[in-house]
Length: 318
Ligand code: TRP
Image 1: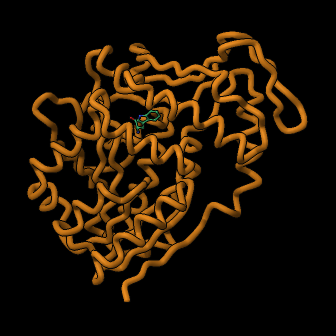
Image 2: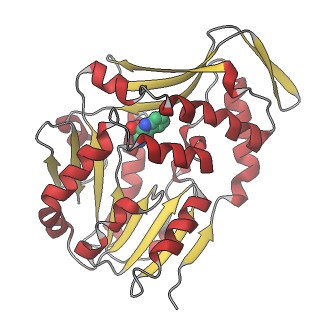
């Protein structure tokens, strides 16, 4: 009987998480961290975003993987343990398993239900592979030492999720991964990162015609209501997304459509029409810039693959 192991590392932090969300909502410039997008509705909407014509990153990354699969697999090497950071439905990692023949697959994500469903689906398909799910918030630091041991590890961080950190935090996070890598020779990081391009195309990728991204953004208010008991009305906020060229980042915000008062943990906050709640940054990196970031994080060797249009970049850093 095929099976998988499953660890929930999120629960112990629940009280601290509540406090962090409330502090964010009451700050001078209110903000909600992007990890809170991913309740079950948010996960489903994000899967839909990845299918949208405007959202090119998923397709461009898939093209790079498909066109260079053998060469990338060769760079990584067979028999590593494969650690999927932000695994979601595990579909991206699944395409690599036959090529990497990992010793085990460790999927890490903040969305426990989606992760458990994915592993249950995979278990009968990969009966010989040891499958582990870890529910964790690795934006608070990546300490997987107990789970990873000292086996050579291929980390997998696709989808330009690294762009959702500000660059200093991204460097920090990459350094944490590098620390894991130096513990076992033959380890490295396969990472997908969006590139800079025409601002209209960038903005459209985060503000699609159907309004799926708008729904995804506004859904974070429902999720926050359920975690900390606020009474946000998602219909009372509008989706705002634009490319900030100076900072090389997409910014996503929620804008109050009218003056309103929101109950927050025994107090309240007034929003005037147009007041913003920041929900996400998505930084874009030219390949030379991201290569520098990987070097600064400690990686000595960096290989790069791109699609023909250079819309996206995939790096193997070791
Ligand atoms: N890592 C993805 C990105 O920055 C996440 C993402 C894509 C996203 N589209 C989004 C997050 C829309 C929030 C809203 O591209």
